[in-house]
Length: 317
Image (cartoon, rainbow, N blue to C red; front, side, top):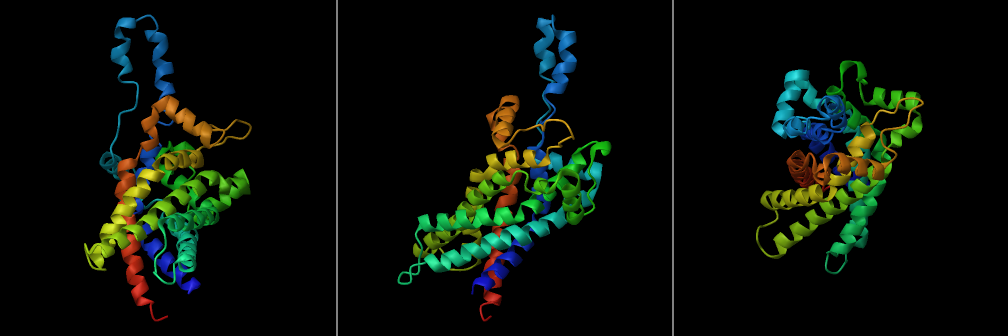
C-alpha cells in the first residue's frame, strides 16, 4: 500500500511537471528580473546629473527596468532563444519530480493512511497540514540537487553568452556543480527549498483534501472530474499565495554566481530578502505571481486529476 502511493504520486507529478514546465520557466525569468539592474544605470547617470536637479526626475523615471509581464517574457524568450527554449531544463524537472514529488506524495499518503480515523474515515485539517509539512520537508531535502540544476538551466538564457553555464543536461549540471563548486553547492538554498516545499505541500495537499471533502459533504457536486478540478484549482491558489515570497528568494539564491575568492552576492536567505526588498520594494517578493498562479493552478489541476485517474487504474494492484 505504501509503495503504491509513491508510484501513483510520482507518475502524476512527472506528467504535471512536464506539461506546465514552460510556465515554470517564465516564472523563474520574471523572479530574476531587476536583480542586478538597478544600481548600474544609477551609477552611470549620477555624475552627469549630480547638479541638474531640475531634470533628474525625468531621467530617473527611465532608470528602473520596465515591468515585463508573463506574455512579454514568453514572447521575448521564444524570439531570442527559440521555441525549444520553453523547455530549457525539462530533464531537471523530470528528475526533480521523480525525487521530490514522488517522495512527498508517497509520504503524505502513508501519513494520511496512518492518521485517518478508522471510524469516520476522515482526518482533521490540523493533521493534514502536519502530514504535508513533514512530507514536503523530506521530499525537498531529497530533491534539492535537481531543483538547483533546474533553476540554473531555466535562467541560463537570460545571461550574456560569455556568462552562460550551458549545461547539456541535468546530469551534466549536477556533475559540473559538484566538481567546480563542491558537493555542498548541490544543496545551496536547501533551507529555502525545504521551507517552501513544506508550505506548498501543506497548503496544496491538505487544502485539496479539505476542499474535496467540503464539496462532497455539502452535496455541491458528486465525486468526479468537476469536483477534482474545482478542489485542485482552489488548492493551487492557496499554495501560490503561501509560497511565492520564499520561492523568489530561493530562485535568486540558487541562481547566484559565486566567483572564486569573492564574496557571494547574498550571504544567505535573509540577506537576499533584505537586499531584494531594499532595492526593489516589498512587492518584489511577489514577482512572478501571475505566472506562479498560472502555473500552480494548472499544475495542481493536472496533478490531482491525473492522480485520481492513476488511482483508478491501479486500484486492483
